[in-house]
Length: 359
Image 1: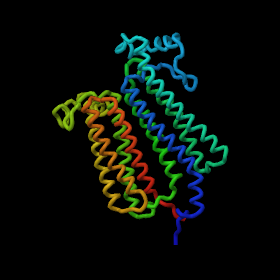
Image 2: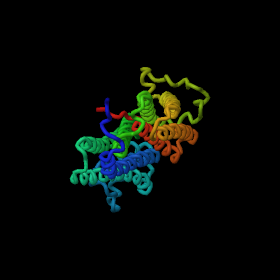
Image 3: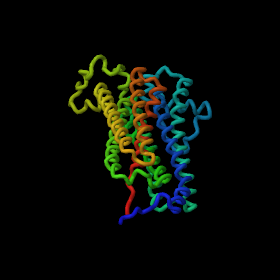
Image 4: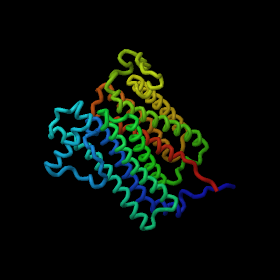
């Protein structure tokens, strides 16, 4: 007879869960900060503040300008950017300070995430509380976070040369990396809090796992096209729903040549694809919710499925509201947060469905 490698209710497993709880809670705090970072980043972009800081000074640039002379210096640097020359050439120092603060806070928050991750990590490591199989995962997350800072500057630089806006490809890379970091933090924390979820042993879980992975992949692609919408400012066009200025499929979706530029460069095509992906994601997740609930699995899989189904409906509503309000900042920022919450629910459901290893 085969046996499970561990018993969910054994004293050893209970001890491991208690010992790992502080590490899991620390990772959840880091994940919450990454979610907040994504919302702050959305507000920074929506307020057109993202190109106000033309220098990248990790650590030493944590303080804002503290004197009139320093303010004037950074303003003079901004005056050399395409954004100032094309759009903001009448801006004075007071107007510059208004857009500066969001970008400064965005960078400050990113560095705070680094400190909140690194300091407890070193403490747990020095105390010998990090298991050998967990250490490389945490080290990899820290390195990925550092890479994300570099990707952010790589994105900003694209708007400081010839064009007064950042590359939507680089924006998609920046947002996608943030969500990857968030998902890995959440998955690792859940694995520490509940290493043996109850639903994993049921045979129905295998099919549901495949369904959930497809759903998560589809949501990831939808988010990438959402970044294309944001970076190309496609959300400011076709502000009607369900039709796009009276058309189900606008005739201008194939205006660019060669044709394969349209899905990535054509405003109409980018928005149409994002709409289609969002609706497809909703249907796939709702089907997953129904299947999971019908399986009557033990544990919290049903709760996770409920969360995924409810959140994707809210997210679709927020997406429609973002269009109809012509990208009103509070609604658009909530839409970005909603995307991450949908990812959260799917990561949680996948955790609840994870297979139990057998000896």
